[in-house]
Length: 419
Image (tube, rainbow, N blue to C red; front, side):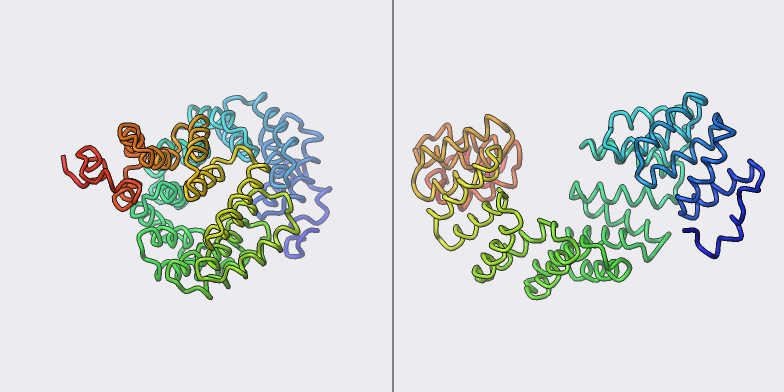
């Protein structure tokens, strides 16, 4: 249905000249009226089937209406008629990214930039694809290139900020979000990104204020409540955190991370009965969930009910045999039950599948240490050091390694000895 305020623009559009139909279609697209844009441009294309700009408008409107198959076909047709149109290569890449065809999207953005090297949006979107592929450092270079060409690009600042947050480079991230907010001080996503960066820098009170401002702008977004809940939790403001986790789940019942964090928060505050009740309710809707069994195991472990925890981990692994984190926890429980050889099998299995799983190396070192196998212990701790040296801070106070406290190599790995 066309908005009344625009009716005068479109009234009796069938009587317009064909060139006017295309202009009205573009105007509709700019106003977000994709259905009208599609209707207008399709009428135009009936007599002008090779008009590349009309094909582009039709493709954009179709993509906005989630008809991706039609949009892809239209872009391919447009590029057949005008293969050197950089803007259409870019739009084609945006849609390919949306459909998860990341390598094809990169090729489209590369062609766009080959034809239009000063196209900031193409650098931004190429960066987004690289970030999706896990090539975040390369993505950052793309955002920087976009800003070199368009210094006031809030989109480039915003996307760079989120990438830096994922890399936990929070100080750089907060600078990006502050710059993005210079263009739009009330942008909810930028407020949320800045809050996340400041939370990473231990500025939790200011982060909560920013999340609250984001929520005021977009109260339907569950992520903003989730991030605020996590900040409240870190400040030990339990009731406020629980209220925000409830706000998340009321907006998105499938937001699993919020359910898990609420369960763990209840458990950490000696409210395990409430936590178990939440799991019982979740079991009714997801009775075959491996994750719910895993978190039930954590609750039993917290209460010292190791055999019950082990049984729940077996259920979790039966539902998801490839879960390394469940198998790692099973190994930990077996160690607590002094079933050392069985625990070692768990960690060995993980490392056969994922050689860089640092916690399995650490736990394997614990097993070897209990068995008095010094060299194997130190070898595993060296693997931990090479992957995540910070984890070895735990080894200093871990009773499994107390007998190695005077070993020079152990001291060097753990920082007890410099040089």
